Image (tube, rainbow, N blue to C red; front, side, top):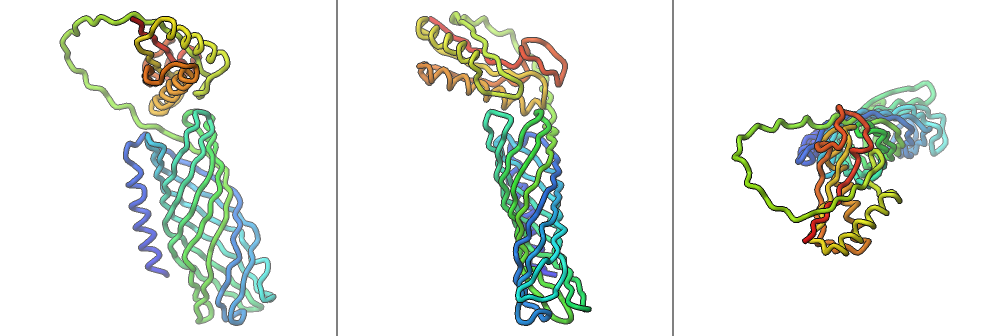
Length: 340
């Protein structure tokens, strides 16, 4: 057993998620499966002379993960994965050697979600931990098997498609590597690398953070505030989207023209969502909608310094509904034009 690999992997596994949990939004779980391709491994082996290189068949991979997603697009997670089905298909120099390899990884990953304002969310990540690599060897009538715990690492690149605010379909590529495992075979030490390419498809379910209770605070009646007159325009969005439709673009054009003709003091854009999905996700979505309207107004000639934005999430419904209801009227952004 490689003690150094276990200690180093465990230390990184304990420290990586801690750095990712600041500003958290909610827990999630995920599962995925797919194909793996184990790279050729060069061994120093008493069974095949001074050295031998093994080539492997394509195999399978499965993983389970649990983590925490943050308001900044960062996710920290623990993952258990297993790769199997990689039989030796040939060796060099040519011989009648047989065998197979499989590996179980205990990983801590940090990932970054790249929000696009659409249901598609690309992500990148790295991971570190420990792997239990087991190899079977056969040469003629001789057969043997041994395993080793070693430090493991991986790189991740993928994309998620949000079917609902809570459920996402994921597809990613992973490069998984370890320190060289050492096997005790026939009284000798056999050493060979374990590096792997994997493609996985899976599902991820986000629970979301529980809404914090707001304590009731007694306040004195507010003094009446005299506000400048304002004109309102409404822009509506498709479900779980923040992109501007052609119909919405025409409304934004009307608002930009009105702001210029009315000598606007300022323009305030407020984004809203319906109640389908978790409140934390809807808060971000409402702000993305407000930002999208702001960019469209600027593109139509409104000075950027004249526009402020705000996201209200699902807290101010135009049509009151129960939780997890898709209501088109609530998926909107208000354009409030204050005039002199």
